Image 1: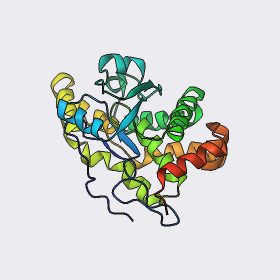
Image 2: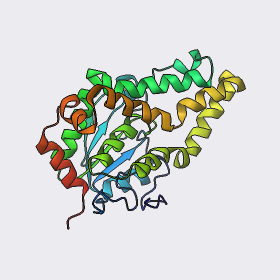
Image 3: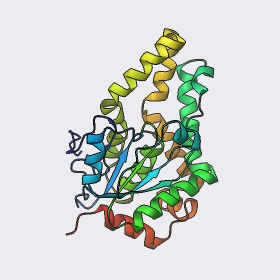
Image 4: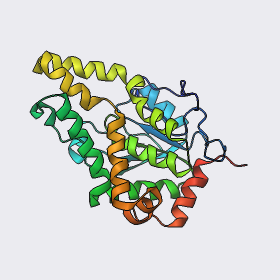
Length: 255
């Protein structure tokens, strides 16, 4: 398995910002993934210093996967030289955590979100739009949602799997949100504790973490509906062979 140590770029104001290629992920044939091409993040409430860092990376397009209400509440910082694209994907419904009875209910709610990534036509259309945009790019690109773990996590897993990154690495990369986003999660759980009470903290914690069963729920939906990743990309997302080939070429380092 590839080492999952710290990558080169870390942002103080967007703690789940990272390179999709990790710090040395390799494709199924051993080819290293190309760094500095695709980046992922949580919402871009950036300090001036972090905004400058992103600009210096040469990122020319930002794909925001959040719902309109999320964007309105916390709009991205405008970055010079970048175009902003709203590619809405439904995440965990706003306020649902208050209604969930216990941690088990929260986990099932998240699994339902991940299943909808695969089964909901609007979600499939948005993920297809994102992937086509990335495939057509010739410069660095960034995609994100609110926490950078669910919608962003699914898109990142798809990209890694397209080039055959080992499943153990894909899962470790997905779960890494729990480590590098710990400070943000602690801050929001403190707010839950203050405003809703200690008894609600375990419920909200399950909403705020990445869990292997969440990713597995989407994978199971892919298998049961399409029979596998290739068919999901082709029939579910409507990606033609040229688009998938272009994504692989963008992700892989030249020989």
